[in-house]
Image (cartoon, rainbow, N blue to C red; front, side, top):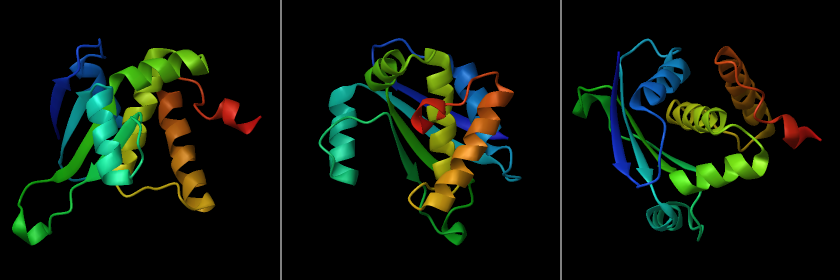
Amino acid sequence: MLELDLQLASDHPAPSEALFRQWCELALRQRSADSELTIRLVDEPEGRELNHTWRQKDYATNVLSFPADVPDELLDIPLLGDLVICVPVVEREAAEQGKSPEAHWAHLVIHGCLHLLGYDHIEDDEAEEMEGLERTLLAELGHPDPYADDEH
């Protein structure tokens, strides 16, 4: 079971809570345990501040993942962590990359959830595994390969 806390800190339009839940459940289905996570939708000032604070990058990025780092013996809830998604950045990227907004949103939510599960893309072999899983999950939703243009 998924417990999703969707926080709307942006005035920009965003997908429905039902879509966020669908994308999270798809990304987290390999996890047999219950899952609890927060998705916070923000505008660029908050996105920039968080990216600067946690990654030392002075710009708003599309999605930030904050895995819960609480020892299991101290907390008896299935807390995965938080995703912070900068709505204007997602909208701009979808337009610039010629992607449907829904496909880009789905990709970023799935990407963020996989980070919460421990997937990463720093090393090439890890990136291939994570991107392959993203492609598979997005194809199940009927969305195209999000990395297709990156390979040309």
